[in-house]
Amino acid sequence: MKQSQRLSARYHPRMRRLTLLFLFVAATSRAATSIPPIEYRHRTLPNGLEVYAIQDRSTPTVAIQVWYRVGSKDDPEHRSGFAHLFEHMMFKSTKNMPSEMMDRITEDVGGANNATTLDDATVYYEVVPSNYLETLLWAEGERMGSLDVNEANFKSERDVVKEEYRYRVLAPPYGMLFNVLPADTFVKHPYRRPGIGNIEELDAATLDDVRSFHATYYRPDDAILIVAGDFDSQQLDGWVDRYLGAVPKPSTPMPDVNVPEPPRTEEKRVAEHGANVPLPAVAFTWLTPAASNEDAVPLTVINTLLTEGDSSRLEQKLVRGEIAAEVFSQADLREDLGMFAVGAIMASGHQPVEAEKIIREQIASLASQPIPAAELQKAKNLMLTSELRERETSEGKAFDLGEAIAIDHDANAVNTSLTRLQSLTAEDVQRVAKKYLVDGKPVVITYTDQGEKK
Image (cartoon, rainbow, N blue to C red; front, side, top):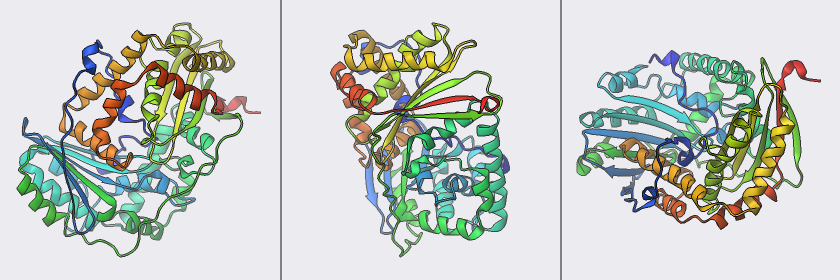
């Protein structure tokens, strides 16, 4: 893919991987049996770079990931989209590597590469035949230590990001709805800013702004290297020391985003509008705890119970009942605090108030009525089956480990989260639904065509 055409894998606030990749396969209770742990080796280099290695020599491939602890929450005020912009710029030239070289050294040997901007981190990832591991470590060291942050690269990638904004947010009829959910949910925390940014703030950015952001966050002591797959441990250590250990650690301290979000004391209603919206929509959002909180897993199960699969509660009540054309929910669990969203795009002839009533009823039911054992087990099995399928690949293992380190602040969470899911009870789901979704005050967002704006 030409770098001028590169689109990020995901720009929006991401769901936990535990709920992203549901594979609607036949779920059986055996999906909840013994799960082998992901075994890893960890060391920290003198320059602060954290290195994790997951050895799996079953196939001659290797996954390389670099997680920088900088995401859209770290964007400067009035400069939203900077983390996402750098996701693109990191594929441009370095001191010893021309633009598009990352594509050549991955795709031309049968591999792949991409990147994704999260709220709390930016991830660069590659999968290649294992005999190209040294080349990729050299390339990651190049862009960590000598990226060309110049006017030409800045302007070309800013144009790409602006086009992506038009393509992903402005063009789809419901693109703006999902773009404004965080802004309508968070009052003070920088999670409220859209990860993709906006055209006005991107146009206002200067090269000095961009260079300052790069110097602040793209450094070895703000990064995590994960290598998973077929490698020799001693050889890996030598290459990492040579190519990434040589990148100097800056003397300036790392900034810390610490903006407390005030508790929501009353329900809030917001009317949003978009262009060419054929059917109205409604969405609820609630504030939830951080990904590391013990209540995170029950929230992901509630997400599954509500909208994942044909037998899910809102699918049955709203879509099968022909009240809504589509339903959605998102247990968006992040480093500092989270957001739970649920909503519906209405069927022709129906209004948001109809879906709003049913959503409230189903949330109340989860909190007050015992969940049938078969329904709960099916939801857990769907999640476990999806996760186990993902862990069949070195890339999937690396993503899960990276998320545990960068978002949960606990590498071992890569293993304990599935244990918590297996042991989850109906009482856990009821307690969490009541605490955050019934006792918590939602924001209720209606979304209609801008022609209906009063």
